[in-house]
Image (cartoon, rainbow, N blue to C red; front, side, top):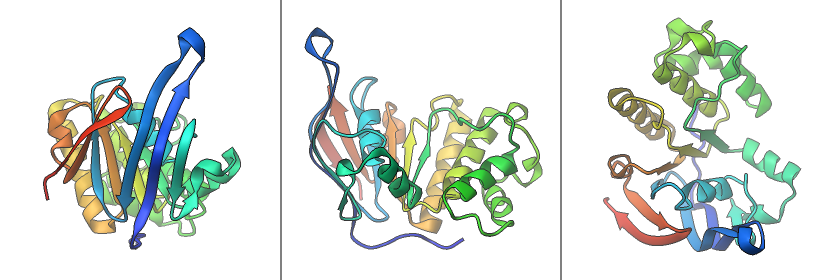
Length: 233
């Protein structure tokens, strides 16, 4: 499996706001956010629940269309595309790892990874799901159903599934939120190692300052606004 990294900026948010509801039910999830993400860059989005970090993650990945502002992906205006076109854009380079593994319950570990590869158009080789599951240390679990996996194992299958889409950008939303401390550390170490190997850009949204501090660039959010940025490298 070769790296999908490219040079230059991958994603840019310009004056992005996201508003849900109207009147008394109006909620501002993001307010006037500017963010630039370069190829191969590693960023943490840090904030408490309700700070806007998950919404920003979804905006970057084209799952949420901003109420105001623009989002570009590889130089094209993602925010101006319809849902089908955004889906095609995501399939060509954006993958997700969510707080829960969200595996297809009736598919084996192998089938979950193979299905993702096929859906993204990247599954030409029958050996690739085996390779990816080997990379995440699950060669012995190819035929296991999600219910037969531990939480850490299920999350590693989710990571392999995300890599099957050959991402240029991996978006992780609280990827250790349902795991104990030791298992969470191992999952984060795995993500770090795979990012170094394949050089995809990585954005991790987290409420945990220790998780955020693993990233060289950390953006703090509160009440839908960027309130600070730290760089550690």
